[in-house]
Length: 137
Length: 185
Image 1 (cartoon, one colour):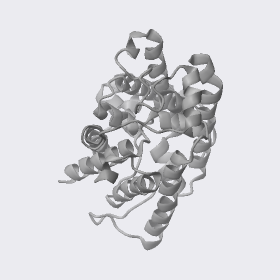
Image 2 (cartoon, rainbow over the protein chains, first blue to last red):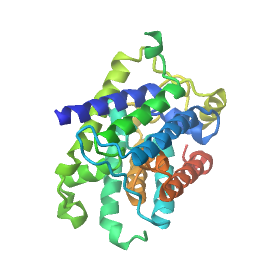
Image 3 (cartoon, helix red, strand yellow):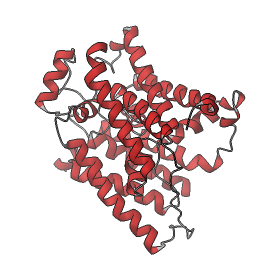
């Protein structure tokens, strides 16, 4: 039952990403060219509501649908991993035009070459796992 | 119905993305897509190479279901909700892309110069897609999150690490598009 709910959340999210065009390589290019406010509108409006929602969850102490306590874990402190990892991610995001959500959406939409991107992303995650101990964080 | 079949405007899509996060949080989970890459590595036997991937994947199963759903959502969005999936980016972007050789700008959902069967006959395109994916996967895990985990969830919680990561996302993206694109394409 719970599994079905998660699957449905994913279906909803996938449709939103496709129809919003946030899964379009072209929209990502346009965003980094500052040629339109479109992507900034998507991220900005999601963020305003996200901030309000997160504050509400923390202040009200609301419980999950299943009655569990909700904990929003703060991110680990650090600078290097976020600055360097973030920059590498940005380089890839602009080149492939897809981040780790839209990749799956595009696979479902039938753009088969995205499977090469997904394979690359898996190799990248694997490489990070191998190198984690020697990388500065 | 017309509105459903047209591209959804940002002021509808943004709030719906926030809603996705809200539902996941209210289900006791979090909104973050890139950790699935690690789970998929674990499932593919990456634990043979390093302990990092030798983890119990059962607590992460829910997130795999979310991305399985996203695949299905992409199928539905593309096949049943988009009679016309051309992305009407700005004329400025179309001009710049035409100069780089992207003739499909403004006429497709993804550039056919990278994402079509014909495009894959060029080894360079394979290299570009593989490299782009690699950077996304490596960068997201190094930074501990991607657009969903940092730009939406993390910033929503006013986390400084997420702000640093998002500044990095933009620094990298700007360098790629403005400095490296003219060299690559």
